[in-house]
Length: 132
Image (tube, rainbow, N blue to C red; front, side, top):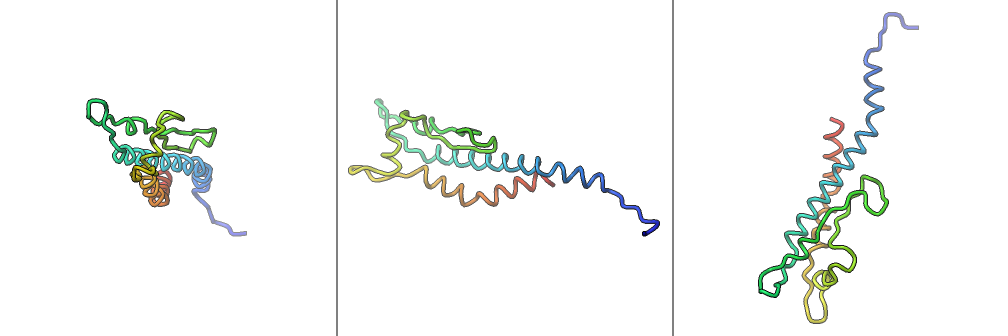
């Protein structure tokens, strides 16, 4: 048995380790929110502006973009970007994928691809901020 040794900081280490899962979960929540808000902003900016009856842009698609948190009974750390409710924007697919008479003008898929490309770095940065 070693005499004269005192191990200090064990209580603080145990408290930090006990807090770590909660902080990492909060970091994941922060990261998902950042990604979803960034993707939604890009979708709004890229949304086609169909002319209304007066010939002015209506912005209906951009107005229908929102972020739903914890949607569809998933974990509270889940964020979905939603463009309109079911049946609310039936013309969305015409813009995104095109028709026989109209070329595709995708605006959702490019935004989703950019969000996916930055997913890892955004999530790591959010976790690091929480555990720093």
